[in-house]
View 1 (cartoon, helix red, strand yellow):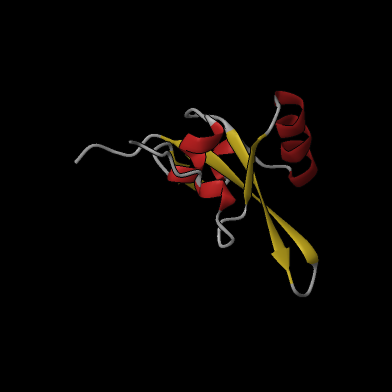
View 2 (tube, rainbow, N blue to C red; view 1 turned 135 degrees about the vertical axis):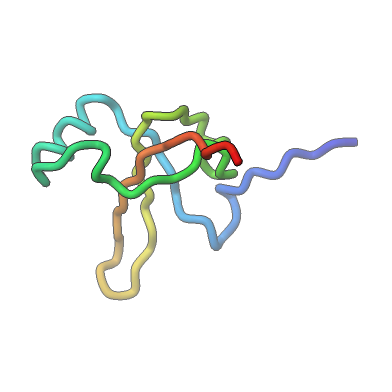
Length: 83
């Protein structure tokens, strides 16, 4: 009797979405950066696994904010280094 937990349904976990190539291009040109300059998130993070992201994907993290109403952050999915 196995029930799979969807971490994205938890109240403390912000929404995670995989960005399209077009969205990533717009983001990078808007901020004049490369993907390597984005903050990183590991490929085995539970939220990343739930949305089905792979290394080199860019994730949009959408949080509720008391001051801004909605805050967006962007993360590059990377493989966790081997020990």
